[in-house]
Length: 523
Image (cartoon, rainbow, N blue to C red):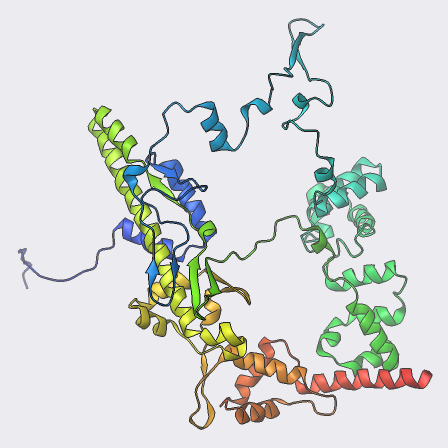
């Protein structure tokens, strides 16, 4: 067989995704925080992009704020890029103050200048601040805001460090204590071992253990514990309730989780009444003592879309303008600079910058329209939820929404990722409205899995000590209500709701009932 080189002409089809198309697809699945960071990076990279003013209506190639959908269709404002006037290349003082949200005369006001005096030591100059009470002593023209300083939230580390300063004067103990405090997480637990700290600091293990005991005596009780049992033990010692019976109970928290009350009674050597009292005392303790001193801000779920009732009884769906970054393309600046560019590289750079800027504004507008279209269809499909609540949540999948709005399932999946809808029933993720279908009994309509979970919780909450519902009993009750569900599905939903089994619930009801009768007998 001989090898021969030859030319062949073949015809075929292929899909080529440009970098711009890949970025447009990526923008769909970004959350509003990630999108804001991406746009901020583009603003720094591209000189032709400018941030739209939030006080007035947007004028540029970006999407308008607050587009909305009603039952009849969509409504968007178009922007005219020619009507936008760029700032001068040499900004004025007022423009700088507006751009950076500050006042230039706050640093060294004209009416209270900082005095420059010659130091007695020689050529050194010293800055003498104005007298206390004048506006030159602070960055604000008013007096210091003592109320704001007093109400400022203190972090857990600062709270513990201030107690360490008062607890010991030994520099070695302070060094070790500061290292241990830095190793405490936001929940209040120590995430370093005593041996590891001793090895890293070159100290004795006994010394580190002694300082750890000192730190564990700080407020709040239970801080710097290495596990839950130690955290509860520290709090019980603080209350002078860590007797042998309670010590045995804390050592077997696994039995407490399983609600094995008979084994706990034998282990602690107490009766039912004492055991119920001990368990109640355990429940009143704080398993995460550091959560009252959150060192980082709590991330709040900000809705991308708002849903509210319209006067005619329909639902009005509108985008959250605060979650939509708006950018403008400075066409005038481009025209002025490109005329003065002589090198081919400069013209190529400006041309590429203009193309990327126009693409970004179009992509942001298309993203807003797509989110609004998908959210409107979700609201239309789940109308019963917005009217009656979770029990009327319908089964819904991506394919149903995609076919209704004429998009691909992957596009709908990207749009619903990391997005939230603000409703009168709270702010919910878009993914919440997509639930699996549970078939209905005797040809009835299918039920949403989330609605079935809610119904199981209602049935368990309504049971009595004499009538604890097993999984089979739950299946029968759900089937009588038109839900065709298997026992293993009920068990899976019950476990996802963290509901104990019927045996554990019956045992807990029995323990509470015994304690209640014992209390009545003592009276």
